Image (cartoon, rainbow, N blue to C red; front, side, top):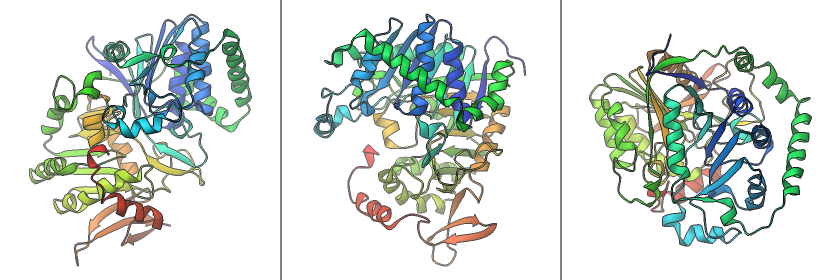
Length: 468
């Protein structure tokens, strides 16, 4: 489909390897600017490979701005400050904690009202012409590079007018009072030779990866070839960007001036036939449960995909979610929970599963009447709604919706998920799945260890749902 002047191009990044390739390609091809905004940027293998590409871009004269939330930066100040010594690299920390050492954990407890509010946005923008928005942070578990856990996730590569809106959102956060230059936070002294040493180490690490199976998979990936040949199959469509105002973290009331939730809600309100929702952390609350049940009673078929207790990486969220399951099921809302044994690259049917790697859902997307697709960073839980800042794109495209529906259906397939149903005899929950090509029904949370079940039991006793 050809675009017109108002439409943007979109390409779903459902495969974890493709998600890494796209980011590395944007950093490698950037000529003027790189704007990078993340909740988490790990300093693991894939993180260092991307740091190498970012440093290489800066060496070419590309202006690099990195904005990262402070929640995961304990002990990282010196490295980030060294990185920012490059004349073309600036790094700012969002909502920084006053404590820069282990006392930060105490600060998180005693000043939870402010410190517990985080920037959850994810954006990777090159030259104000191409951008990646979605659920992935920067780290091995998002790119199929971690041996014991890999996320099932989803991003969207975008080009066209929508990218200017994404750049504007980045600038709003970059210039906000909540963003502080790393130089103002860290008291540790760094010198230019440390930057040179870092560059040498990253370069050596990059050249060593070239003989690994992971690098060969990157080289041979179809997306790599399509990028080189400039044959990416973008879908052109009208779209709208939604993002929270940075001041949301200081606002206690939900409103259209600070929260994007009320702005995007009309798209879901207009649903007439079907709602498909994927959220790794799903805590609808009383009001959300009523909204879903009302839509179901209006004749809208609703399917919700989230993590099983065995697959989730945040047990506390499961404690908040499980008490709403029966109410939703009683209103004919379908619930699917990802299995820990599901293929971590489930969206790529040509890959073989890493048998020693556990899968966990991390994708956040919604499909309305097979017409609208929303992809972003927001979960369906109180934290995304009230505490964290988020970003996402709503695309008006039947073609993109068809692709997203295919991904959704692959994930909820019986070999990859449990469908929860109510027993016809006693109304209790039953988990239906397929194992070794045979139907299997569980009477309790499947594959979950006793300690996990006990943790959920005790967490449910705590009044913490608004923090989940």
